[in-house]
View 1 (cartoon, rainbow, N blue to C red):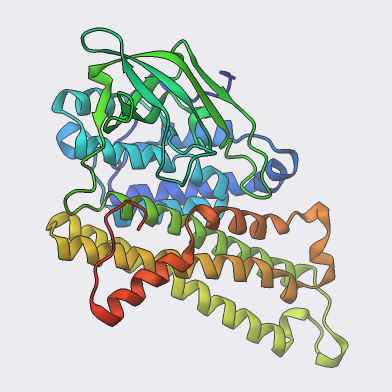
View 2 (cartoon, rainbow, N blue to C red; view 1 turned 60 degrees about the vertical axis):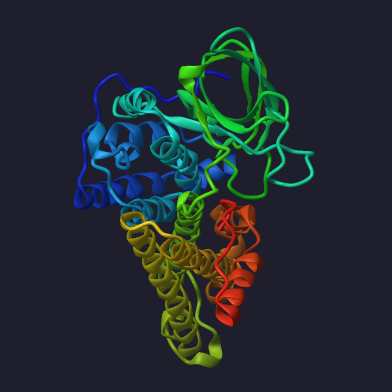
Length: 403
């Protein structure tokens, strides 16, 4: 499929932090209006992704040295949280866009950075082709770049969970450079011969992220579009924590959206339980107590998320094993609490709202389905395990990019 690609021809605005947050709120309000219908009908959010690209939000992490604002991780995470409260599908689509821009910052040559960041400042987008099905584990890859003459390679493999690829202008493909060689990222034009994006994503939740298959058959790639990846985790880094932080922000947004929709439903549609002796369900003390508990959970998750973003900013300003480890632990805490909170709040939505809230036409179950699906990216139990090892023995977490 090629009709869903997002393209822009004019330079997008460079946004400061306040502008980025305000525009994210505006975009989220628009996105929220069609979220339920898109979920029911599995309508891909092409217009919403294009609007994000044209607004400048997808360029906010481009470094200042290359013409961008270079906004810190804490601000990017808040933008993600806000957009996810409108529709977490739309928020998840550019996740890999930001993660691979970060990869270019850390591993790209000066010339590569100049080319990639110039494209993003023109509103062009990046999708991913990273994960594979049927391998031994999530960090086992078979996709390979094989030599095809001096400075030339052929890329072959099949990827899955390729969020953003269907909408993208360029696809970042994680592959071995040579058979069983070091890992690298091939930045492939979406229109490249041999690159096929298949819209076969069929999930319980996050239905419109188009996170399906990318098939690569003898795709031609030159050295100028290959960045190294193999040494990414040998030294202290925040690359993995950054990706995990944005996942946590999406879950926090889901929790807030579920709570807001529950409150709206109780105010306008729920009937009071007779024993409460009140005219409105919103006046039932048991309902009010439940909402207080849910609000407390969401606020706690937001607070831990905010601290994780600040910890990541501190590490990026002074990168050592200790600061990188502290950032990873802070993000692990955010991932653990936002996982729990998003699933709990989106489930208890029905408890506080009553039977009518379960009607299929309302599609309120999308919040739970989105939370349950998105939180499967990484086991929250392993986040807690690493936190426990730190609490007991002061052991820093591993540098494998998933914490």
